[in-house]
Image (cartoon, rainbow, N blue to C red):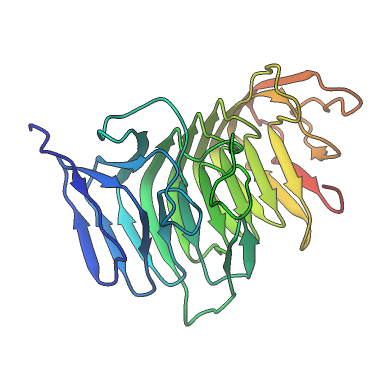
Length: 295
């Protein structure tokens, strides 16, 4: 099927909006799926997020944001960065992809959500969400961004296990952390993070459960403070729980002041920044990476 011309996705989305297979959609502003809104995505749809500073956005960049109480219904969804001619580019300079739930209150990067369950529960369902070159690094000059800070490729805030039914997540070449959970608790079957600008998996007072496959490639570069796991504890402990029989393939600096409980995986050396590598199945028991009171 021939691809049609790109369609600019307008917001806010308040009712049901269906994205059709064979069409590429462009997020050229801050597009929000608001409470009660439903985005239905046919299999294999590509969404492009425009790179560059956007003064009209509350975060100074184009972004796709699912507000508390919104719905995503998808099979395989691909989200990539693009330039002002709507061409896919291999550069991350956008606001990324955000999901807000009603499970817990959360705040990050100037955006926040207040717990309100079950009246404002969200529903995010997909077989696969894959993101490429989302987020952005530190601004190189003064901008309208109130934080003057970098942003993650995929952000999940205040989302609980009853709100999240996404089988697989992939994040490639994010402008900051590959995936970031703030005050959330989600489970996936498969998670893959490749070459983020900073940390692979960042949790803030959150739990992430992975059942079948975990692959995180944060191969060491000359960038410091760049880890496989960064677990923060602002509002409580953070955990990554990896199921028994899960296939694990991780490489990079493991992370500061973390505990690893696993008879299958070797203990990490926290005394210096050296590369950690493990590839194999967890044959003996589940593994737990946690931080109780360290950041």
